[in-house]
Length: 248
Image 1 (spheres, rainbow, N blue to C red):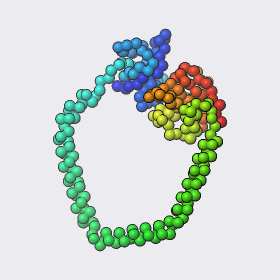
Image 2 (cartoon, rainbow, N blue to C red):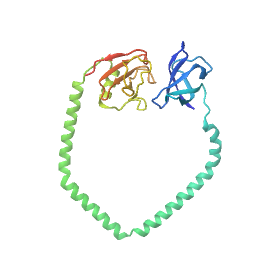
Image 3 (spheres, one colour):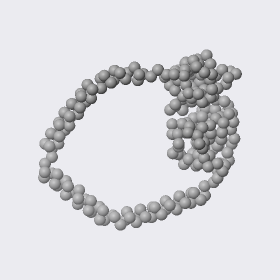
Image 4 (cartoon, one colour):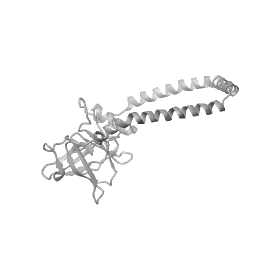
């Protein structure tokens, strides 16, 4: 079974979408497939099985509040077999190590190791003696240029909204990461609710905007359009509404 949280729920029409753990594509579910001990609500954790329909859309075949773990069935058998397997692996590893040691002893000799060591020392002395000054000079110059570039970038960075988290997320998008949720950030936003202008599949991408004092992803997202992004949208209520940002 897969797991996730209820992302969208339309009680009047009896359908919704599940935000799947470690998967970018959401799963559609209908009330007729729900087997929960309490009413459906947004943010509720569920377990489900799914399959693709004729239109290649993921649909849940069963939605429950518990899961049957395969590990609970296999764990006693694995624990029973573990001592025998560990003993077998230890014997194989020991034999392999002994064989490799005998091969290495046949191939190596004190004289060959001595010549190899002398050659390595001579090469190191020549290399570092000739190029150390150049490397030190280049390194100092590189650090100076890098610090100047970083200072210039920080001084000229535009404040888009005044919200630290939103502006920081926009800066990450422009740089290409790294993102706080790499499994989710940068994935396709499907615009299923139709609240953004219609575009071909793959045109929109979504990114998490951290919410202070919230331990999970929260409800704030930035959705970009185009590659590279040509338009930016902000939603603070988990896709129910959007406002366009003026990003240069």
